[in-house]
Length: 390
Image (cartoon, rainbow, N blue to C red; front, top):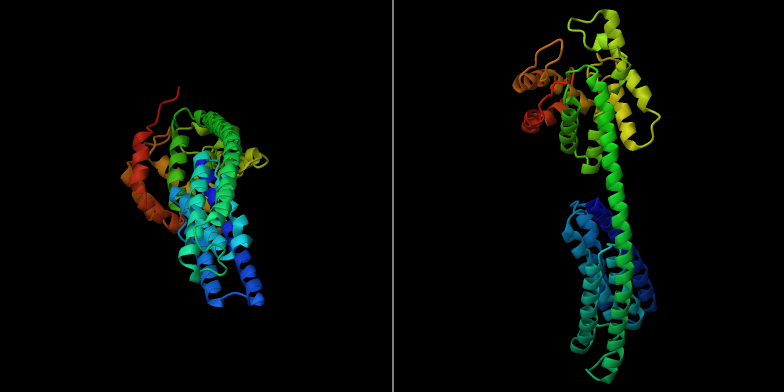
């Protein structure tokens, strides 16, 4: 959760820098109208500032690096460079930008990062003044011409302001980081409790048949594998796994003599058994939260077939994608698990059966993911064996 929080802050910071780009464009146009500056220097300096401001956005939008720790450091360095360019070229007009890196660093709820930003910006302030003295030709309107009393009178107060504000930011971030840590810990505990209750509730329905054992745990793990392979983020895959635990919750409404019947079901009994998907949807559809919404969909559609010959007659794209995932997971586990009415298949036999039914019972794109991740399915099957329930 902390990692996800950092990723969200990286995205917000990148948007802030995009706003700076819009500001630079407007300010550049304003300076062009004044015509009091060297247009070549103005264009090069503003162009460089725009490039550095867009680097974080490219890292996040194109290369999807928002979760990397490197990204926040690149974000800060780019912000400092943009600020240094502006205070070098604009002088008094650019001085408010010395606070920009500090403000951005404060978003991360990291005290060390705040001090790091202050150190970089102070170095940037000194570098800006030195550039004005040593290379005045690339500065639009230099105010320093030599290292004299005026240099000290202006630079030292700027640095002191930066240091003072960094300590203010440090204590604000310290307080906020404690609050966010408490929130994250509380949310994590609630998530663990929710998953425990979901598992316990789901196990009640599984235990009615007295021998399905660890079916719900394996199906949840299989769903997580296929969810990640489908490109979903880890948070959503955790929700998929939790929702998958309740896919057979409707069996609570099915008589035990039908669930445990060792021989073939009659047509009437089979129709009663098929109704567990509707019972499951009815039990879950009005429950709040995304996990329950996912669980409701999976409970209703987990017996649907790609060719339309499932319990409810849905076919192809009419079936939710997550339901097409659980269809493969549920069938694979059912085949490789002993039931009161059948012996278990080997994992290789189950693999061949699912591949054979690609395009009929199963979505071909999901079967391709299953083939690619079959070793992980085998590992989960071996790691979570059934336990006889008495």
